[in-house]
Amino acid sequence: MIRVVLADDQEMVRAGFRLILEAEGDISVVGVAGSGDEAVSEVTRNRPDVVLMDIRMPGMNGLDATRLITAMPDPPRVVVVTTFDTDEYLRSALQAGASGFLLKDAGARLLVEAVRAAAEGDALVSPSVTVRLLGELAGGQAAAAVDHDLSARELEIAAAIARGGTNEEIAADLFVSVSTVKTHARNISVKLGARNRVEIAAWAWRARLVR
Image (cartoon, rainbow, N blue to C red; front, side, top):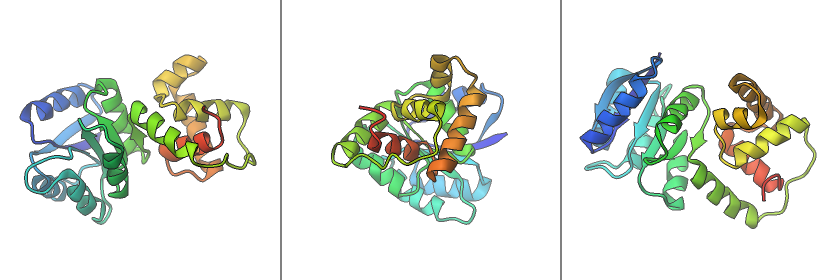
């Protein structure tokens, strides 16, 4: 069971997220918070696996709370969930130690996948944000060295990840199972020395697998 703490200053958002997550059967909401201070307290009290963290909250904001939480011994993974689609927030969230960045309008399916990815030690960023940010990153850099040990299928999946595809979407497009996509993604991470999907995507953009 994946244990989750929800931190958002809007009660309706917290209630909606709880309904979405607990309908999955393998996710349990063990605490809720309406501020960054409360989020830190809930994490200390309940020791969740994943925290869904809003940015703008009264008192301590979500970014400062994320820094405190990720500095704890054996910290949970933090996924920042916000309405603010800005590259500054994304960079700040990742620098604070967040393991994902989602927009609140990303949809229920992506919210659930972000929680599961974080619990597995991966990172997931809203596709629209990933594509825009990494596209800008690649625009100012030379193509990465082509020396790699990726198979043709792995290159295909790396490109799909860079376009912001979820495991389910990539599996459907390539007519393979979700578990197969996950296995390829893990192999890609090992071969590239990438810690998560964001770093796989960054490599794919630099290598010009995506244009």
